[in-house]
Image (cartoon, rainbow, N blue to C red; front, side, top):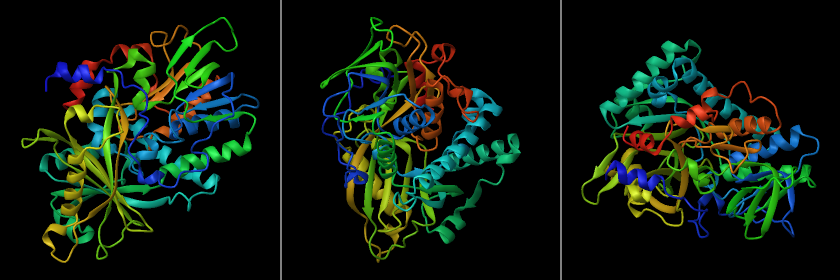
Length: 478
């Protein structure tokens, strides 16, 4: 597949979230607010937030708690938290060692270290939020160690180099990782078919439950200031200064909302409303499965989560692309494995359509989980069976960093005063989105972002000029 063809795919309109998405296991018991709507759409609002995932929840919480009177309207195309957050892998994990070398080349050692600390702090803050609203048990938040396994020597050497450079550049970050050889992986952790691994602190969570409960708490605390409007896709935003107080017109099937400011928390669908960003950021589909491992398989959900890294490859049998990562956790209560990854055609991967499922990805994940835990070589072990499978849409940026802040004039709909963005987590929204959202909320209120927010995440005209579909395609081949 040529670079030109890939650039054309990622530069296309992602469209709106599809009306008939695959059904995630996380959402099998819809929250009471899942289809919340006001009897009629608010005619005006101080701040319109488009998107109701973890970013939208974080921004909303800051705005309502740190301002005495502002009104917030959350607009969601489908049901509450039905997008990426309600479809992800449930992982509370950093990816520092894996990305550190490339990150250092891009932004320098000092900023790369700040990004790692930001990820660590975001995961700490998520635990704090769960404790604040007393849902730690409800959302099944569990502290574990994550075992990242490597199937080839090159991948293993890469992560070891990342750890060495991270620790050399930032002595305060020493001790996060423990490097395991093949024997320790097999004997201590019961994983097979790898050349080595690394351990680091992590966690697991039921993300849908956390975000929907945050909205529930906010709706009860601020009933006159928060409107949650699900089933209300925003098809367009127009800057119309005929009314100074509410210059933004947001079009929806239920009518029009006028807003003083607009926050795009739309991640993989951002390009639909902000065409100038298409290709510089782009959607990427992943597949998730829930697998029954059988009664003989030990439940380590209270201690361990997993990832398998490998050199990405193209299967000559069907020309599907295996993207180089499989990630998983185990449910503490049931022992079911939640494993995700992608092996599909590039066209099927580079899409915002979560209404269908890659059968090749599901089969690959089933085979990979069976192989990882040695089921293939142990006749007494059952082959994992698929309980549930679904797809979800992530958002990647060409420089592999989120975009946070006020939109420069080159991206806006005619004015740079009141349009904001928080998107592009590159598959790692859980260790980025909450604090990025809190910072965006503070910026909307006219305050500086939190000190912990990496300046490299801020969206500026200079940064935009370095971004392009061509660079996105180059990073796809890294």
